[in-house]
Amino acid sequence: MFRTERLTVRWLLALGLALGSAMVLAHEPVARCFLLDESTVRCRGASNDGDEMQGSRMEVIALDGVPLLEGKLGVDSTWTFKKPAQPFYVLFDTGPGLQVTVEQEEITVPPRSRKPRWMRTP
Image (tube, rainbow, N blue to C red; front, side):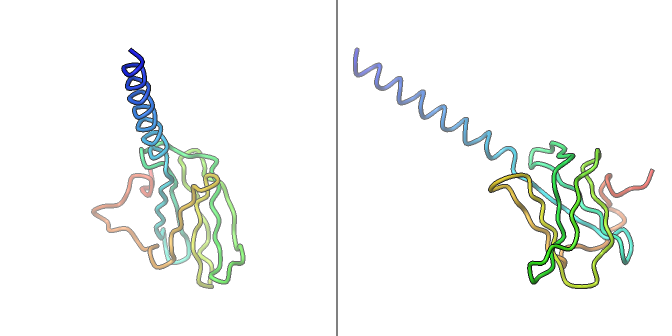
């Protein structure tokens, strides 16, 4: 009986760890940024399971590490800003260990045929 209880505890522990790690992975931040025009950038932040992340912080940082702009995601989980003249990247920070960056080279005009809904004007 003692051996059976130990085996049950091990299985429950393994199950708990598996479920716990799945829950942690379910909320990793994801950020995408596109050019609205030559001088305006719109970024959207969400979790990898699609949850909106309104109120989360985004920051535009120069390549030398100097912060240039800071903002929070709106109700639609987007943030729009003027594109800096100097090289930069966007940091989406949702908490300790939960950051993602978007490099300036990744920020382009979306293809017309595949324009994300959050980029469309009503």
